[in-house]
Image 1 (cartoon, protein in one colour):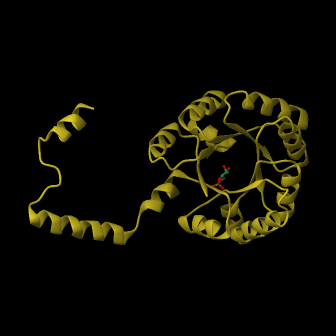
Image 2: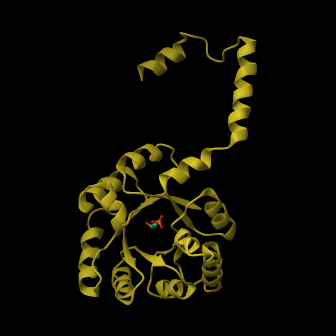
Length: 231
Ligand code: E4P
């Protein structure tokens, strides 16, 4: 399963990219606005930091302008994926861009029927929003199960299921159990994934017992340590 980070905050992206666990980035107009930066500059910088797919969203709503925006965004870097909303014009744009070899992420998907349309339009990714469905008392993960099942029935459809609007680690775990291809995670959820109280208490007691032995794996001032310090 691929892990994308769902933010346009370059500091967060740089820091979490050091884990080696990030396969890509998703942004949207709200996240770009929150970053306070210029979309073209922000996307270019993100593409330099993360070599995987970086989604950059168009902001027009008519086909011709969306297409021009998408073509401009795609030229920013080889790893840009153009993000379009799931509207009729958005899917026309998806079809045109994907036919020309540009990767497209179709966003704001809230039904299995929409996901089927996006796959037929040649989307590289479909982004169903689980958290926003949960917010209105509709089962977000149920939608993921439906899309995964439908896509699996038609091997010719190559669209990957990118679970979006994730709010907590259980969304990720459920998505993984269902075989979703990608999860895009807010930085706060990525940090939560590492945490478990039993890991913390277990480590604390290991370290306390170890301290009692008076041993040290590395001898202080060994040549190893000197070399590490010099680097
Ligand atoms: C995905 O591509 C979207 O940017 C994102 O997941 C939306 O999440 P939200 O519902 O928390 O805004």
